[in-house]
Image 1 (cartoon, helix red, strand yellow):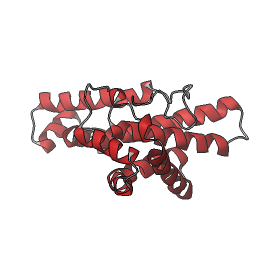
Image 2: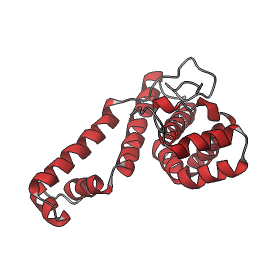
Image 3: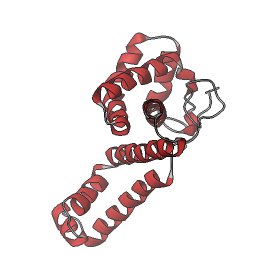
Image 4: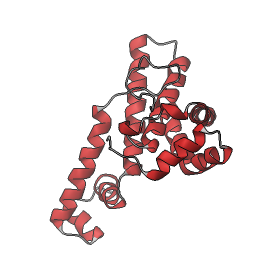
Length: 192
């Protein structure tokens, strides 16, 4: 979701990284390492590979802070896109034995799953709780409403909105690499 002005923290962090402030990288790591590692692990299903990918993502952020374009979305979204791309590259490299179509299908499937995880973990707690009750605990909307202490209409609204957000994971496949510089996040231009 694009926005006209990114949050102040995002802009300041980009500026600090561009100036080479090591403390900024530490703050970025503290804030996003769990998300990056989780996405990488979801795509790769391999702890050591997810660790290596996490390091590669933060190295990329350190070396290329100007690639984030605030008009394309938040810094968090850009970091997630970089993570997905780097993890998908590792997956492609690892699976060279299959046909190109098989490898791309595995990459698309893993990427959609990682995006769904990211969306669920990023959505407001009220939506996440409704989805967890309905789909993991197999509660209907009435039971979900009762458990959450909300009206049935509110429970249906939360479930509908949560499902709409999740459907975007299936609707958006991993974009192809743009003609940008090597290592650039797909679809994201340089900040100017």
